[in-house]
Amino acid sequence: NAGVTQTPKFQVLKTGQSMTLQCAQDMNHNSMYWYRQDPGMGLRLIYYSASEGTTDKGEVPNGYNVSRLNKREFSLRLESAAPSQTSVYFCASARDRVGYDIQYFGAGTRLSVL
Amino acid sequence: KNEVEQSPQNLTAQEGEFITINCSYSVGISALHWLQQHPGGGIVSLFMLSSGKKKHGRLIATINIQEKHSSLHITASHPRDSAVYICAVGHRGTGANSKLTFGKGITLSVRP
Image (tube, rainbow over all chains, first blue to last red; front, side, top):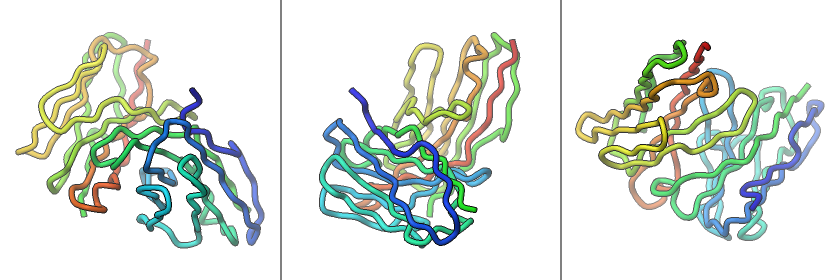
């Protein structure tokens, strides 16, 4: 049972390049999340999908787009990367509403934008 | 917006010591989560609780809803407990209960 799988683990981009971070879960969870983690800031929610077919903005959505491709997969896209998007990105999932359910995290993607 | 404060910011302990990490929040919640992150590692959920106390091995989590406060206790601490401990709270209400607000985390170092 793999849990939550994120790819890639590391990525270096130049300013203006685009990329997509992939996330897949095999626990049949309804809700999925993308967070970024910066030193001294704690985890901040970028976007989330409470159920298949829905997506909503979190605390820091600017510069990002998401797609809930199906129940398993939730991708995060950076259309034009900026140095301010240098961060560690975590995908997570929960059986239902994370306010009431344990959240399971992927291993993270370390992104550097030069 | 719910504010989540953790204390102390950093903590160093000697192996075998009893450790307490605190978390306070500002408004009513659906549940409180304690998470663990080892250096360079992923994030693991330790506890989710909405009342009382939970215990798993050497870890004990308590919550006082009236005082809006939770504590994570580690008994007989070990160097492998060295990690960042993160408190997060779930929100009530339709839509809102799909999100968590996170504290900044506390870095614990246990010396052998």
